[in-house]
Structure formats: C-alpha cells, structure tokens
Length: 184
Length: 83
Image (cartoon, rainbow over all chains, first blue to last red; front, side, top):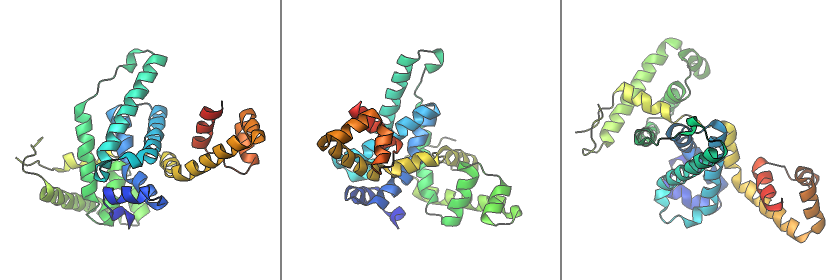
C-alpha cells in the first residue's frame, strides 16, 4: 500500500518515475496545499487553482533538487506560500482595490499544521473512522447522507463519530510532546 | 503542559483540510503523462517546421489533428513556448 509509505519513501518512488507514487503524493498533500491557499492566504478560487497546479508542477519538475526527502512537506509548504504571495502581488498590480489587503495570520498557518498532524493521526484509526470523520467534518455531510452512503443506521452516526473522536484523542495524547503548550 | 484535545478542538482541525476540487487533483496527478506528451510535442515541433507552423496557427486543432489530447496544462505550456 503506497499510502503507508513515509514521505521520504514516496519521494524516492516518484523520483524513480512511479506514477502511482506520484498519484499518492498528490493525494497526500492536495488538501494541505489547498488549505494554505484558501485558508492561509484566502485566495480566490481561480487564483488558488493556478497556485495549486503551479505547486505540483514545480514539485514534479524539481523533485531531484530536494536535499532531504523527508522534508517534502515543509518544502511544499514553503513553495505554496511563495506562490500564494506572488499571486497576491500580481492581483494587486492588476486590480488595486481595498479588498486586496492581505494580512498573513500565523494562527491560520499553525492551525493548518495542527490539522495535518490530526489527519495523520486519523490514518491510524482504521478505515471506518477515517471515512466517517472525513465525511462529517471535512466534507460537511449530514448524518442522513452518511447513513445512506455508508449504509449505516442513522441513529448510530453520532455515537460512531463520538467513539472515533475518543480514539483520535487517545492517539494524539499518546503522541503529544510534553513541551507543547496547551491552547485551551 | 500537554495540549488538551477536546472534541471542539479536534472538530475544528478536522474541518480545515477539506478536499481540493477533484478536477484540480486529477490534473496534478496527470502531470507526469502531460510532461511526457509535452516533451514529445516540443521535440516534434523543433524538428518539423510544418507541425510547428500548424501549432502557431491553431494550437488546439494541430494537437487534435496529431492525436494529442489538448489538456489545459499542455496547451498552456505550449502557448507560452510558441506564441
């Protein structure tokens, strides 16, 4: 299963020309790049699309230049941020308007990093939890839709989500570093 | 102090990484095959004056005429190179 590969292993396979590995790499980081564009920088959808494609084009063409294969995620993040800033600069030149004001919020980026860590933890919970948590939280699906699509009794959806969140919490608590400060 | 992962905090984080539009993901996944096609088209255009002229005159028609699918990423890159 390519999904189980580490970032470094995935990069090595991509570099060797494995197209399935490339598909997995895009799948693994697509939400992250998208979140940086639309949540971190609040790009308009059409600008976000250009940046998104540009990021993956550059990742593909410059994969050979990556010095540390395990550092692919920070590299992608840095690349995405730079291209988002370029996009904003271009838009400001073309269309100077008050709403073009942009303030980079470090809270948003910290939340995106947290979200990635949470998503990685979700992958350890098993397919059923991954599916139900993703549908409910990331895809905004209703209990009714989840029930119909996963063929589960509607009355059990809430309790399944709660159970999966408990498992997720245990997983994260098991991983958490003592030095990280509480935000509560 | 360790972080407290309550349901609200977890829910907020789970909502952040929403799926990117499927078409965007698919286009990014097709990059390797698109690059291969692109390299082939560019090599042909450099070697074949008639093909190059046709590309400049009507890029998409020339690609289709030669059996290449005019994918947006290929068309965009060829426009940059040949216009």
